[in-house]
Image 1 (cartoon, one colour):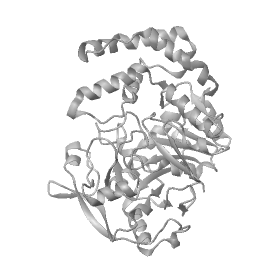
Image 2 (tube, one colour):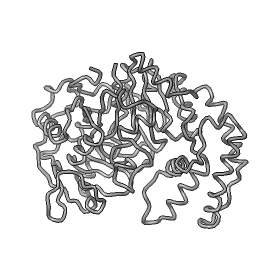
Image 3 (cartoon, one colour):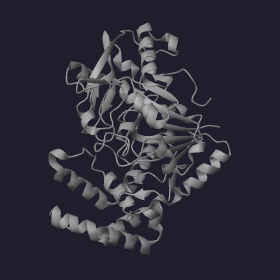
Image 4 (spheres, one colour):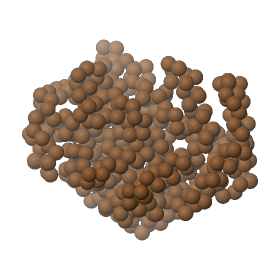
Length: 428
């Protein structure tokens, strides 16, 4: 049975939750492998809307085991709050597994994140202020706190004290803030230990055994390709690897076990936060995309920046992830435009460029080269097959597929769970 990676092929917010939920009924395990509660997935089930930030989307699918892998950074307060909220709505969360090797977001990580971003002023990155970056920095600097440390008070205390030796110097001498007491942090973290103990597991062992037993495992990225710390629009990126390679390190499985890599694309482009965005619109079209598409961040509440579809980015995502399929979302949002521009290349210093430039300077100055495709006015939310779509909508999908370099195997034609056209099964 297949192991699949599902990830964003743009700057995130492409609708990964909808895609994961579509597959959830046929999947045995859904695994978050990176990021933290800076991600947000909206899943609509019937007349119910769920906003998930840290939990895998598969938690809404009965029979599916949701897993938070070792590559995720976990705010225990957020985790417990999300679980409580779902329990109150009748969702069974008892199957959740949490890697003992996942790193914990501590109160001082959140404090450092917020004061650092304010200190940067106009040079700020646009972080969510939830401590994600500082937690990953602690991990790399080998002063991080892991879930398993909650169950050895002596080790936890030593690690918190070591981390605060440096951070308190930073807070007091550079940012003019009060020092943080290690004892208070330890006490707060220990307060979560018993509450999450029932979820903690050796998830790497569980997942590899599941794959050996021919179970279907879906690895779910938290952000998009262009936010990858190595392959994104650095420095305006997240602090981890949402690209396909991150699934292996963030979940502890080998690359030879991955069968398919599915990229999620919006039928247009959005991003949250600072950084270059060649097709960004500042006119009525951009506002219409934002309004019709409901483009407001699930986690941040910030309005998303909106622009036309960028095929250069899609081709790049295909290349760096080894994409086998695309899931195209929000095609319905484009209903009503007589003509729809699509970015097919960039102009940089007077030259046409058809691949994403590796130079940040070049990308910052890239101007989109558009081709215009005919639009459609018919309601497509009731379409059940590709042939049900208007001819111009079909042509738009086919053009995007040809430009992007991988087959479009599913199309989202509305926000609902059942408003999806499946062209080719991801599980075949």
